Amino acid sequence: MKMWQGRFQKEEDESVNDFNSSISFDSRMYREDITGSIAHARMLGKCGIIDESESEKIIDGLKGILSDLESGKLEFDMKAEDIHMFVEEVLTKRIGDAGKRLHTSRSRNDQVALDVRMYLMREMDEVADRVKNLAEVIINKAKQHTETVMPGYTHLQRAQPVTLAHQILTYAQMLKRDYMRLSDCKERTNVLPLGSCALAGTTYPIDRLMVAKELGFSSVTENSIDGVSDRDFVLEFAFCLSTIMMHLSRFSEEVILWCSSEFGFMELDDAFATGSSIMPQKKNPDIAELVRGKTGRVYGSLTTLLTMMKGLPLAYNKDMQEDKEAIFDALDNTKLCLEIFAKMLDTATFRVQKLRDAAGFGFINATDCADYLVKKGMPFRAAYKIVGELVAVCIEKNTTFEKLPLEEYRKVSDVFSEDVYTAVDLDVCASGRKVIGGPAKEAVDNQIANLEKFFKEV
Figure 1 (cartoon, rainbow, N blue to C red):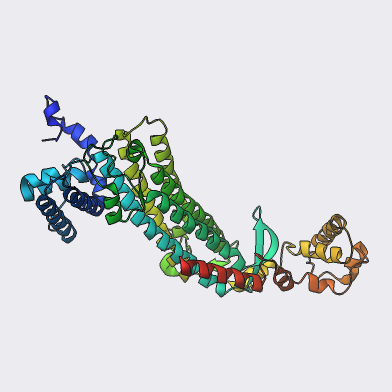
Figure 2 (cartoon, rainbow, N blue to C red):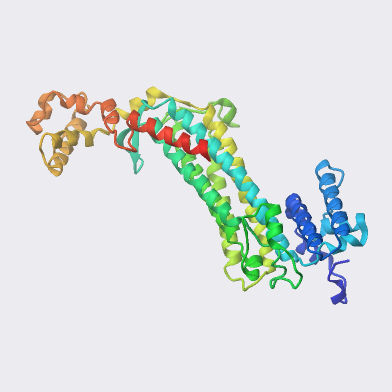
């Protein structure tokens, strides 16, 4: 029998029960639901709202349910409406009428808001740990390649010389921001909604601060309507996950390109690649492709949540039940992608010579050649034009700046002298960019040190 049965004259249709039920997905919050209920029961007893003896009986009963669920002795009843009613029904069966007092001065509206906040805060820590782990894998790879020259790209065209360390540390910087966003999101999630009840609080003399302290919340919601109708923290977490996935997807795109024969910059370990059912020569970067594909799925969850909330009047509406499947799916996929991407990257091999060879084509030292002329006193725009003419000469003669004879340089401008070959040397081009944030070894080493310091202290 449903708890609201006294108001209705008919039994609920079986299809309505199935449609309305959420236990199939909210059962994953059983620890949070029981832990929150224990704190609530203890507060009820301390405040004299129920007898302390009943409070202790409820707490013992709840602890038993938690133990039995975790050991497998107790299984979820999929016919229950939700995790809250399942726990309450089992509790009442076990300890009798005392179990019915647990819901005093509480509604499922503030109860589910509590459960979701507690569950997501725990998962935010888990996601943050995986973000940190991937960042550390990238940093360790970067340490091995601080002098590995490669072409940097804009518009997917070879642009300027960088190092492999400089290139991949870009993603470590993205992950650093992801970690910071998760920390900020957790801070805004860390607010206790319990005590808001259905929407208008309660006339019972409850102690919300006591419950907040026991559960580890930093503060309590200041508006009871907002307490039950707010899902900003879910939306914000979904955005954090979407941004993480966007970063993983960008890196995945690089991995996919770099593993191709056309680039040949890296090779995945056999344990983290797949083959073809018909083409025996193939070695496919399926992990990176799946990460790229799952990014759209996580974006979809964010869009679902935003759309769900956009037209809701205050306070709680049943639409908000849809928040859990969306955020849980986004969460599960992001965690999975972070874990397997880290393993894939950690075992991958970079082809140093291929990277260096690629840097030798495409005139990626053209800007350095122009800077050479500027340092000789020529205006940059004039130098830019001259170097453009040199590029045309090199293309015509099928050569590079490094191999172009000095007389060809001097045909374009008599400013050129023998030292131009030092200026356009790719290693010199990369190592000369010592500015903070640049690809020179000194700058990259400093970047690595700062990243290591950040992730060590968080």
